[in-house]
Length: 239
Length: 239
DNA sequence: TATTAAAAGTGTATTTTTAACACGTGTAAA
DNA sequence: TTTACACGTGTTAAAAATACACTTTTAATA
Image (cartoon, rainbow over all chains, first blue to last red; front, side, top):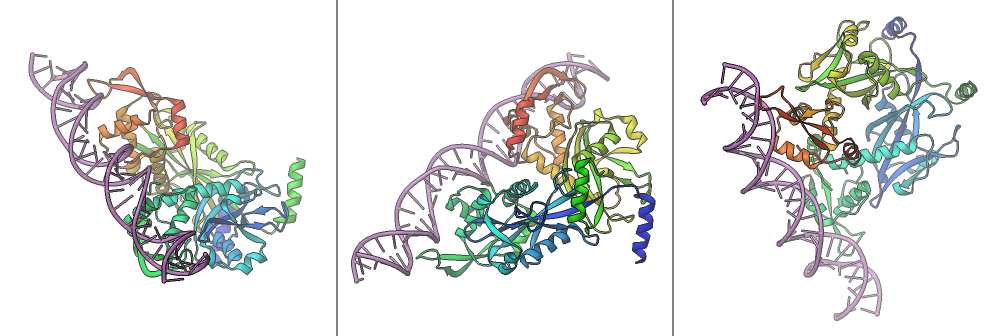
């Protein structure tokens, strides 16, 4: 308490005449269901723009930093904790929210669709949409999604991606489809595999996935240590 | 006024119980003086941390968006308008500013050092520092500078840079020194020139700059149209 | 049980890009 | 006239990216 009191005093002394604003956090939640890249949207249950589709959001609380606020918002919608999230951009147009002067800090999250709490998102009137079939969104949320896609593309080319989006074991084809979804184009499987193998972050398992073909496809998992090292180092995946 | 009244009413109805916060804008101002990359810092004239070096900053006002606030802050320090600025990241640690809960949105700016108002920065107790000799800064401003450098490096590799930092006419060597300053390493001049020329955005002039050698060095300028097209397209400058 | 269908898996040749590297030129100053 | 200094230029070898097609496996079906 003493610390807080002291802050109050300092604040009065130094920053007393400055404007304060509402700060929201909005989350672009990407998921992958072994076929395509999807995004989780909510049907807004309150005014303004009630009934329209939007990103999930919430307001920053005094005692939180932005990363924590974003995690809280994600947790409330999906039941998931410790998810990869990254700050994207802060949107500040004066009239972006007709209700009040509100700035919004956009975060994007990457999750394996299979893991989320389906009941919870139903309760929140949320729904997964394939990226290309997403509806029009309120406010500047379309811009946010577009910027998140651009960031995701860049990220996929500069460090490994997939750990957050794929199940523990996955096939080469799933990995490739993930990259195709992110990059928005078809890739040549031979080139993709040999390039990806050159990063040396995959472990080939003895198991096969038999669900997608008669021959079956070998399963892989990430070598977590090498994966993380590559995340630090970065690489150049030219596609 | 009616619009504002309506907002007030909506706000009371919808967002009434949410916390509001102070939002600052801090600017990482990069300049180039034909020799090295520099950064403009101010000696803080008020508490807390009075007398220490910091980025130039200011508080967001109700009627501004962030881009405008950042431009205002830059203008007050340098007298410059219409400068290239880009939003970098929003810093939000709860205790980042001991005086009060303040978030800060960092922006970086690129300017030609020759153009700024020297008198004005003297009045503001500001000073240019070579990037590598910058003093320790208050709060999280060191992080901001580091992130800005990383962003600048990435930007220099993915689209042309220089229009904002160089004088209208410049030599190949100056351009190369700019890139060396950004990338933090020496480059081979033959490879640099032939790679840069492959982008086809330079115009070689008949004039020479005689200040740096007896032989003199040809001056170049950017073909603005082609330059801008490349900024849109992006390229891959692998160094 | 032979055939079919569908996805898995694999290698090479060509082109493009990058990286490494050294010496003659022009001119002002000594 | 000599010197000193930065300017300007081209080639070759290595690495990376791209384009491209056929065989394998096996469950399902005839």
